[in-house]
Length: 260
Image (cartoon, rainbow, N blue to C red):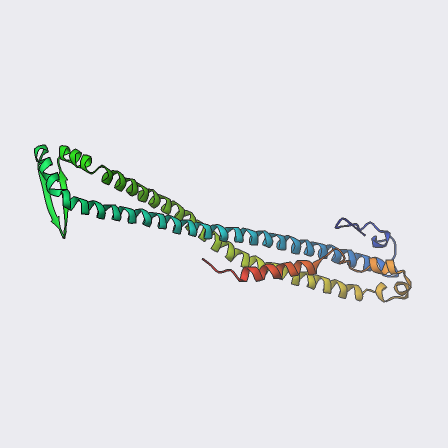
């Protein structure tokens, strides 16, 4: 009998009797109980393995999704960094165009504040070094230039830091995903082996019971259907087919995944 998935072997037909056993029934009960216990343990192993593999599959999917999210975050941060760089380039272009028209007037106003070193670079005029007073005048003459450039420069530096942080998380998650994927393949093989072990125990148990003297006696043939059922292996609470189908489904899902 079974209760809530647990087996109860207290039925009188499953208990060995004392004294001399001429019929061989005690021997059959002993063999039946021994293989039934082994069979129950084997099914419990199947169930635990499949449940663990299912848990691993869910963890793998979560890891994969998280890694893909981090990859998108990196791309987004890089796009934002490129946008800030583009804005800086546009600002510099506009200021240089403006500066070309104002350079003479600017330099004239700076002469009293200190020495100025002028360096010609291609078509643009680049001011490499100014005294403190000259810098202050330059900032007063071009206030928006400095504020805007440094604003977007800071944004770029912030994005660089964010990219490094997210890239570290991404690399760590990719490593975790690849490791999980490798481990689950091994566990799937162990899970498949547990079904083979169950079938081997079941077949061996049936063979042993079939060879019992009592099983081939007139007493067995005349016994009730209940007695015959109880003296044979019970697999009614072993939903092996369901777990096998679950493992096959999980295996197909895993096989579609590749290392990152």
